[in-house]
Image (tube, rainbow, N blue to C red):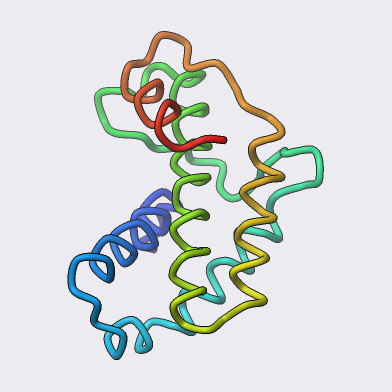
Length: 131
């Protein structure tokens, strides 16, 4: 989304939160195709060993950018969070295959958890959103 893979992750997280807040299934259904295609794209970029190649540009937030090791860990935790929320969205949409793909992708990703390198932003996302 807008050339920023982390924005696509936030798209999934925000849609999940919006749906949980409002229960607006028709709105969610309007985004079904993009959600399903995004899950498939993400899954295609995660290897069985947890290596992920979604985008060469990692972004947590602008102040974190100099701490590339921490940003990498936070980026991966954000992706795990987005995949779990995407799974729940797909369950609501009746997209069972995509729900399984999202869950499997999160499981693969979490086989390779990196240290947060003392980056508080990464540590906080990791604490709440990795298995």
